[in-house]
Length: 411
Image (cartoon, rainbow, N blue to C red; front, side, top):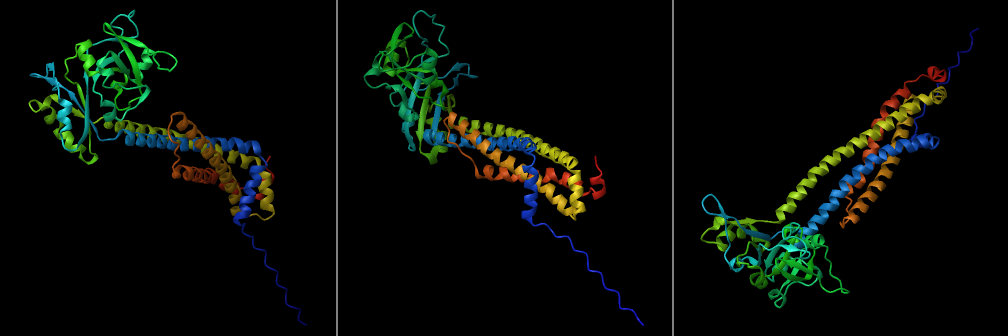
């Protein structure tokens, strides 16, 4: 009599893979149950991301303001100055009396004006010694200077055909600040001492970023400079505004047009090149600050990694229990990796908000438009997620290598 065939054992259940939503839920549970650790770990990442966003946003705001300044002032302004004359340049040269008119006759030139240096000393009052000028200069000016420079008057008025013949002056913004002069409707116009004469201040210019020497000058009329200050009528600087597409050509012929006999005695420059150099300098500093922000971000990543390693050590029993209940090594890795990514993601979101606020505040305080490039706003959180993945990789692998026995028996 033969026995019945042995009954086949049912196959062991295969471990189920966790869905991405389940892995994320496990990561959120680990974050939610330890709020203090979450805050401390996220703050390090937030500081790095905020520095990253601010380092990108602040220079971008500055460059936007710089471009607006370029457009307002115009990159088509040229400046011709008197250089040196004589053999070996042993004496100062002089531009012709009609240098501005000669420059204006160049076909692509839109307008030209001039200023002339005087040897006069300006003081707040006659009780100060003549040598106490505070680094301020007195310059004769033509009436069309402000239009050529595209400047503006902040207080009062500019010189006109009536006032330019009399002892009146318009101060640059820096000169007015050093002399402590401000024009108001409630008080009469102040006076300053120019050599042995009193000059009435009729206006104060707005800052001229391309012409810092004019910012620290007192401008007087061409006729008044000849009458009261012994001005010889020779301009020292000629300002030329040309067509945008002909700046290079005008620059090449400007010296020969102003002084055909000695064109080498005329120095021609482009003031907007100074702003371009400033922009290059700021870009160099931006690269430096970007490196510092990267260091801050790295420090934040190390903080997340340390936090996750400590978390693995503290939660060995939890890991052992989950392994004993059937959790696979992959599931344990996914849990701790998700927790690390969530921590870094929270820090990244907070860092973007903080960096955007810093950029907006600083740009507003400087009078710049607040600019946040899209790659800074998008790249900040993405950088945090990548950082969280890298920082959580080792702790996740370490947690997954714990066997249920050693995890449950850990002290």
